[in-house]
Image (cartoon, rainbow, N blue to C red; front, side):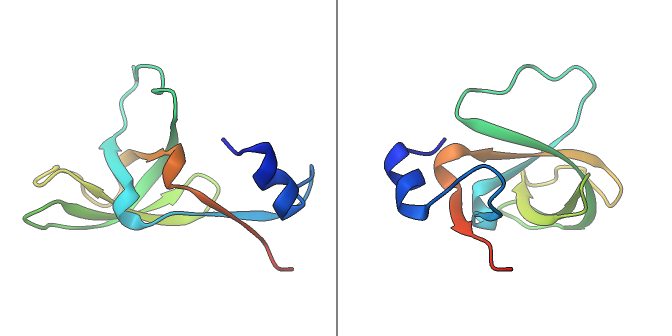
Length: 104
């Protein structure tokens, strides 16, 4: 979601390249399942593959690659059981995303 005021301030238009940014701590990593319930309004779920999992007391840090090749980092619950190669969903709340104009 983006407000009309933000669209105007950034000069956004169809076809304009942008970057979507968020902190890794805003990305919740869940194991992907075949029968997933619909996304909760106000969240984005991105299918990915875990490429690295680092175990931690407060949560497992997961580096994941989206189907399009973009890499993101997020956190799963402690002892998530995830490992490199696991199919995952990266869940991000709308209000954790910042839009920036892409250079190029």
